[in-house]
Amino acid sequence: MKCLALLSGGLDSILAVKVVQAQGVEVAGLCFVTPFFGPHSARKAARQLGIALVEHDFTDAYFEMMKAPRYGFGGNMNPCIDCHGLMMRTAHGMLERHGASFLATGEVLGERPMSQTRSGLNAVLKLAADRDLVLRPLSAKLLDPTKPEREGWVDRERLLGLSGRGRKPQEELARQYGLTDYPQPAGGCLLTDVKFSQRLKELIAHEGLVRADIELLTTGRHFRIGDRTKLVVGRRQAENERLLAARLAGDAVLRPPLEVKGPVGLLRGPADDAQLGVAAMILARYCDVPAGGQVKINLYRGDASSVIAAVRPGDEEVAKWML
Ligand code: SF4
Image (cartoon, helix red, strand yellow):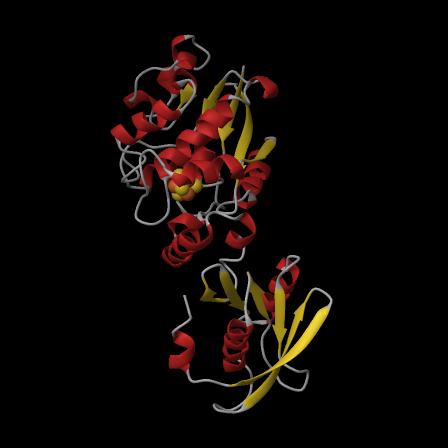
């Protein structure tokens, strides 16, 4: 018997694997990838558990879901119920390919306010392709028996009945299993982050869900200088390099002259001369010149380059454009 376990890399998902493995079931981990969450923690967990990991990028389906999540968003831009539902529906379609008969998840009844209340867990199942194949080993004893339990693929008696927000039982189990290195719950999903969610909302309102733009949201200071035009300014060397690496055909790069210390600016979207002037003025704010001093900002777009003379503005001027 083989099971595909949704593995975020958080403690609950690790424990769910352990509980199923303890019954002699072969487990492969499955983690989903989007610009909002990645495989980093799951890779670490799979190594620790000694199981194979399937990484599946379902960004297109995820963006589609985010346009109108049936159960709405949580405190930030996190559509947790629809997100879990989509993961389960997608995972169901992967069972046969991976020779697995059922799914396991690390959900715990009552642990999270939206997606893991009893009604939240049921809502997730409504979105799953086959609710009967979704085993929640950590709370199974408090939930209706699923096919793997009824068919005797796993022994329901040896599954758990955890519930609530307290982490003590999980920590005790982790100790028993000898697990010491695991991330904190809910870490790693950008959609639960306040600042990221604000930037994402603003982006969606102007430009929709565009992967390349979303990937920029965690880098630098952001400025909206046109309905479809943004400037991103690096805050440190690593961000400057990330911006240069993220440059797309059609993007412009702004830089101060070599003799002036200052950041890289990445300008994305159409810009007329006035908007280029605004972008150069904003970049000048972060250059190493006194307020009111002039900087000649170099602008590179495609093979062309030009120079824009800008005066370093005060913070209140720059704040008008900052997101
Ligand atoms: S926290 Fe993020 S990854 Fe987790 S269920 Fe919510 S939206 Fe999905």
